[in-house]
Image (cartoon, rainbow over all chains, first blue to last red; front, side, top):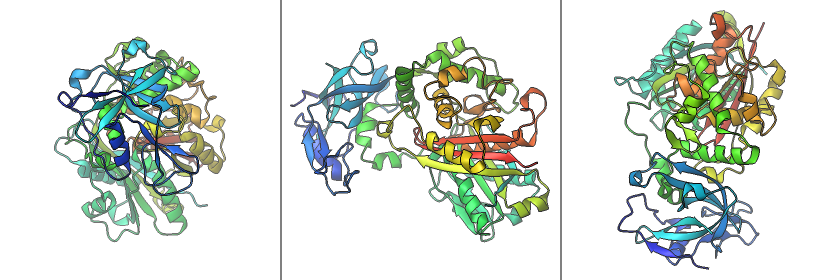
Length: 141
Length: 382
């Protein structure tokens, strides 16, 4: 499955990911609308991308494409911006998302706070914020 | 095993110290703590520092104080719990006769100084996930953990607020506390929204300042004639670092591991604890730590802190100097929980500020984003 990519390069003032080393395949995937996680031959699945598998120690665990769906583990509504470029966005929602495949990641939730609850289903979208990366953003399913 | 004696404690000036840098504050706290112990700089043979705006803080403070070839040096950085963590290393060093007088020091200019060095954040692979979310850290990270706790256990914003209200009651009796006006649960709930479910009064202060404690060997303590406040138990751990998404369970902290270990070492149970100094970077931090240390069942922290349990006159006096929520919070609050625990055990205070006949205190530090936990049990030897 691929997630929709929205070009936000013009309007984005926030930090942008810098693909490097183990994270490069992840960010390359985002430009294709694909949310990738590391799926080691031992069966362990992990994000953020690392040079080693945290279960068996294998180096460079391979990437697989996620279905891009998951549930909200928790979230907060930010009234104070934590990074430059977010001032005009407040309030905005940041969540910890449990992907169906297992890994959990922090991401913006593009939703009205009142519409959110823990455990709710969400799906991924991508906001392209630079030439090199599109950040995963989740919306209620 | 021989137990280090907490012989002296002190703060530097707190609040705003625009004419002093972190090192000045750490050094001022150190000389005041030495004076409190009746000990001279010449006698110091060990130094442990964390959190200074320098990547070799133990070397910098040793030079600044012109220490003569210190034999014990510590600079392990595990955030706000570093100072509790140091107590274990000091114990080990003293057991090997490596040191007799160790200063554990902290200083910062969190409020008036330049912004914190962000280099660590910019070099970690998770940054590409976390920083583009704009999450205001640490409040937003702790807020997400608090939200999960509310979801799993029915903890309410009112219960979180109870922690702030009780802490302010203690602060009202502390002339050094930055915030001393009484507050109500409604005041907390109506204060400015920061990161839901946290309002401003759920969050710690931002202060300049420093603190230091002097740990000495039992032989040195006898020589100095100080009250024997012994480090009777110490344990540390971590669950994650850079982001709470890596925290295995946001409703349980490392205190669930360190509490039982430290209590076992000290040979105490919860009933023995007279006073608790529990890191309160946020209301939730203290609430979840009380659960994890076992003062109540998991999930019952909200109920436990309600109705003044931790306030003056309550069943478990906690954060009796006003905590990070109302007294001061220069960034790494862990040194201040040790300072206050020692003062309570020495019986330094008068009236309601003093916990009656306090013999056993728990000092607990938390660091990072709920990432590290260190528990110290202090006991006054009779």
